[in-house]
Image 1 (tube, protein in one colour):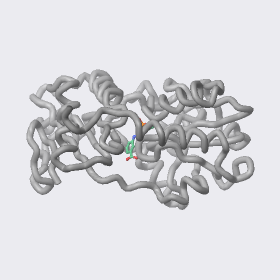
Image 2 (image 1 turned 60 degrees about the horizontal axis):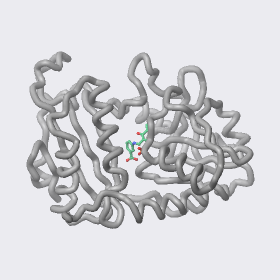
Image 3 (image 1 turned 90 degrees about the vertical axis):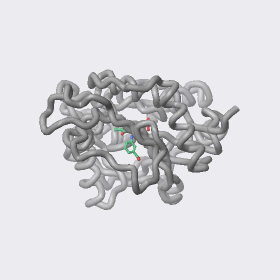
Length: 292
Ligand code: PXG
């Protein structure tokens, strides 16, 4: 397996970064998780746009253009002969010294890992997930905006550990005010009376690429109303349907939260329609890996 590292395709064993890299020392960097389906990279342009927005938000200048990053992603997939893949694109502040001052980091570290995808077990999609609400709050915007996909994922990791210790695959994270923000690596949605509701990004949710696709599919395909509104765990408990979205999970139903069964305990019918529509879209669209 070859890894893209600072302009070169190197063997996995040789793909190493310095212990002085500020990505490691301070979590000073940004990343994206992207998927390729059937020879095409899904929403690649949107992922690269978000990477550049995250970088801009932390005043990190990426030394490549968007076009060059896109080509690097495609080339990495080509050398690894991958048609279906999980792609991790990372940009750090680069190697510096043992101080926070980013001026000592003269060039960013850029790497791209492309690997086979490990999917959630099929039962999760068939029966729905049982998730918990974490006691760990989502980062507050005044400290570190949750809209930035930065390498600081410690609060999410802590929430994930809390979930795992309770035998749950995901945890719901609330914001400081107690409103639902999102999950550790997924956005959250509910259906109530045929209206789709998800927290606005300003309430502490990442602007998920899958989230945007699902909102659009609900409008156009399901012809149902979509609202970005703040809500509390109560609104999840009494919802008709709950589901999560993310690049890794795609669209996945939630049938139990904090030990409470949602509606009849089965994946909801609108959720099932969205899972199908999303599946079709991933198979049909995306940037071709192969050179034209
Ligand atoms: N919220 C957070 C906090 C995320 O990290 C999403 C929502 C979903 O966004 P997308 O654009 O993927 O629809 C994410 C996704 C993984 C993994 O391997 C995923 C993410 C981060 C780290 C790991 O499941 N990000």
